[in-house]
Length: 95
Image (cartoon, rainbow, N blue to C red; front, side, top):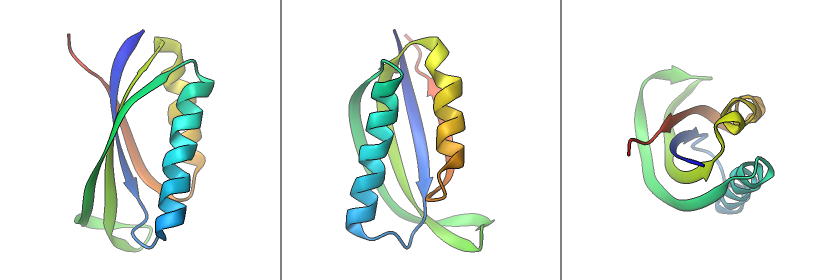
């Protein structure tokens, strides 16, 4: 299993319950791919350099997890299809 770091940019107009539900969704999707969540960090709401889907700011979350290498492509595709996630970036952490 490899260690990964994912940065999520979420819609800024999400209610707290929706935000928690979305983080739960992310955790379940990682678990579906035989991954394990190591930690989640809220990086707060920040302005965007340019508008994305007419939003000028977004909620940033940093998620650390372990998963097999073949799990990353399906995770990226799943996160792209969620309308509450404006952008996501998954990087493999160095050793």
